[in-house]
Each structure stands twice: as C-alpha cells, then as structure tokens.
Length: 348
Image (cartoon, rainbow, N blue to C red):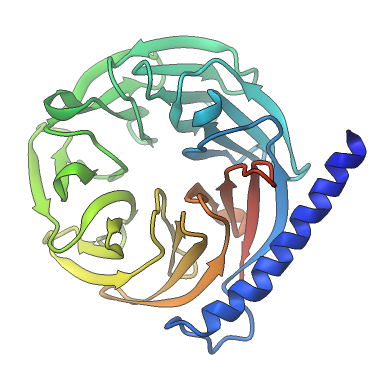
C-alpha cells in the first residue's frame, strides 16, 4: 500500500506538471494578457487529503501555527493541514455537511464550523479541537465571518423568509440578536470593520443585500444581466465589492458608496470563492471548470484578466494566505486521483 501511495503521488505530480504546461499554453492563446515572463500563479505543492471523498467547501487559516483548515462537506469532516509538513495532522469527524469554517486566533482560540444538514454551529477548542458548545440555527448554516473589533461571529443561515445573519459572542459562546433578517438564503458575505455594513450575496434573487448591523435595516442592490452570485470579497479601503457570478461567468465589481456596478468582465465559471490580493492588486477566481482567473486591478474601476491558470475540475474553493503569498485550492477526488489541496505561489 505504501508503494502504491508513492506511485499515486508521482503520477499526480506529473499530471500537475502536464496541466501546467498545456494549460499555460491554452492561456497564452486566450484573451488574457500574456506579456509576462512568468505566470502570476505557479503550482508548488500538493497536500494529499487521505480518506476524503465528495465535495469540499470553505477554508480558514490558523496563521500562528501555519495551519490550513477545510470543510470536507461530502465527507462530514473538517481537515486540519500543516502547510510546512505538507500533510493532514488532524481530522474533526461527525459534522453533518460542514460548510463555513472559521478559526479565531488567541485570545479566543476557537474553531467554528457551520453545518448545512442540521443547521447547527459547532464551536471547538482551537488547539485540541474538543467540542465546546453547539448552537442551533435550525436550518442551513453556511458562511461565517469574524469582527475582531467587536469579537462577534456572524453566521449566514436559513432558507427563504426564515433566512438571516446570526450573531454569536466569541468570548461567551452565547447567541445574540440577529444582525438582520433576509428574504432568501445568504451566500457569501463580507463584514465592514470598522463600520456597520454587511454585504450579502442573495444568489437566488440576483441581488446584494446591504445590512446595517446597528439598525438591523436592509437595503438592496439589484444585479443587472448576471445571476447566481455566490462568492464575494471586499476591498474596504477602496470601497469596492468583488462578486463572482455563474450565469454568465463574470467578475462583477461594485462601488460600496453608491451601489453601482463599475466593472463586469468574463471569468472562470462555477466559482464558489474568490480572493483579493491587496499587496498585488489582484483578484483570484478559482473556477470549477478547471482553471483560475487572475485579474489585475488597473484602478478601482478597471480590471484586466492577466491569465487563466490550470487547476482541476471541481476545484472552486480554498483560501488565500497573504502572508505566505500562497493560494490553497481544494481539489476533490476523482476516479484516478485522490482529494488534495494544491498550493499555488503568487509571483510578481
């Protein structure tokens, strides 16, 4: 079995190399800008996910201990990866369809996991991963965010008119009053900090909900010509909201002061996460179609696709680790290849 595993890793590495060569060739013939000596992302590592099957959802970081933590939704587990050792060091089992996962560092030091199947938010010790508490949000808990200034956890949950953004005190683990109610399930959302707004993708209704968490009031920004808005990132300094849509596959940029759409450009499709690289002024959009779109921010209103970097079918979630210049991409297992996290290094 050890020999077989070693052979599998070698074959996988060769496949990655081949994909990189041919994928970059394809990218060079696309509309992406190719006047570069090196691609903006290059694959540098593969971290196997042994015994993980099915869909892989969202990720989080424990930066102090150099850990990447991901929800293996189809496996009902959360996987903890040591990025230096390049391996899984712990598995948290028994979580029905984990979706959002959030690590909050010291002095809180807790891991929060949202479960789609039973609607519960599970709270674990950040070092031992022992279960501390469970909060019941009734239905489809999903994305999680943390406001370090207020020490609050924000929880997207619910379906239809029972949807909302819930709030948990990170210190006491107590559920507080909801930040506000919604008319449909919240997908990705971003929390201003400092500030009072929460920007929320309502994918089923082609709109962005803007929730004031102080007044609990909600206003809406309709999206024109695009649907299925799932991932979102925020550049708070420049007042820009980045949204990925699947129908059609686009990167949409909105002005958070006016609610106006300032950019709408073709992108990798079937995305579920996207990331803003503030130091390089780039947006990374991993598409489940098998490549990552890399956009350069020319200025706050103009974006150009630099490259389409080859990845794998179904690889649409992960996490951007800015301090290490690394994009960690979740690659679901296939018939001829086990699940893994592919690691891309950002290049200037």
